[in-house]
Every structure is written in structure tokens, then in C-alpha cells.
Length: 238
Image (cartoon, rainbow, N blue to C red; front, side, top):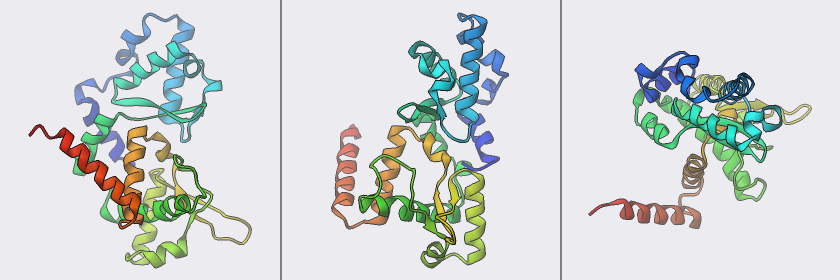
């Protein structure tokens, strides 16, 4: 989600009447805890919500202790968010799946078509293709195989100026990161830190979209379409 859009869409997600000061919003949840525990919960909340990268649980008691972690989940739920395990002992936060669906249906929360197209190219070349070659794990957005700028220019139908502008917006939104591959190498682009904020269900949906985009005629794509059709039939009351 893009700078400026996130705040406005976040307000719609939780309801304008519920955008209040943190002390008021969380008072009911924090009241049972002593001052130290309250501070630990607020510190963990601020870290998972505002740190650019997932935070290690060793630094925050509220992430290590199950009871405090449940309280933190309740704090996040008040603003339409949820706790996301980004690695075995690293955490961040993201939108709940129901809130994500509502925001995705709101045109004002949707990135421009050019940005979506460029982001798809980055994901296909830095994640989908390396994963298909067995170079990446099944459930990771960390990639050592950046999509090169020259490759993006060859594959994109956008003028170079529009492509570069889209990449700048995507970097500013945390959706892509520009990396150097080595000495004398121009490097390229990989998924940005916002991808760590995807819930398991959101990750699965996006991974399936990459399969459909990168290999629409592949057996994997056929399996995705078959499973989705079966799920749609199960969800149809008729």
C-alpha cells in the first residue's frame, strides 16, 4: 500500500470513530497489567507496526511470552491488524484477511495499473522463476536473484520513464527493494519488506497468482484453477 494511501485506508478499515489516541484505544486491554507489562506490550506493538523489517522476539518479552502475545494480538485486532510470524523467531504485523479483502475492493486503496504491472514483473523474475528452478524455498520472499533493471525494461511495455517512476513508487511503499548483486554488477529488484506482512492466507493467494502469471499453461496453474473452482462451488449456497 502506498504512502498516503495506507493511512486513509487504515482509517476506513477500523472506522473513523475508532481512530483515537493509543492510551484510550488500548486502555481496556492494558488495565489488568502492571506498569512494566504495559510498557512491554506497547513497545512490542510499536515495533511490529512501525519497524521496516520483522523484529526478533528476543528483544521483546511481549513477543516471547504466549500470554502477552495473545494480548498483543488483541491490541492489533482493534485496528484491523494481526500478528504475523515472518520467521521462526521474528514477528511483524499485517492486515487481517477480512480487512485486506475489504481494502482490496476499494479503488482508492489500489495501486495504479502501471505499478501493479511492474511489481508483477519483479515478483515473477526474482521469486517465481527462481522458485520454479528450485533455487528458493516454497514460502519465502527473500530472494538472492534480483530482477535486473535491463530485464525489466525488456519485458515491460511501459516507456522507460514510466517504468522508473513506478519502481520509485514501489520502493517508497516498501514493495520492492533495490539491491546490488556484487562488484561491478548493477543488481536489481527483489520483494520489499511489506511482503513479510502478508498473512499465511494472503501469501498463498499471491503465490498462486504468480503461478498463474508465470506459467498459465503449467500443471501447477491447472491445479490452482481446479482447486479454486472447487472452493467456489463449495461456497455457493445453490
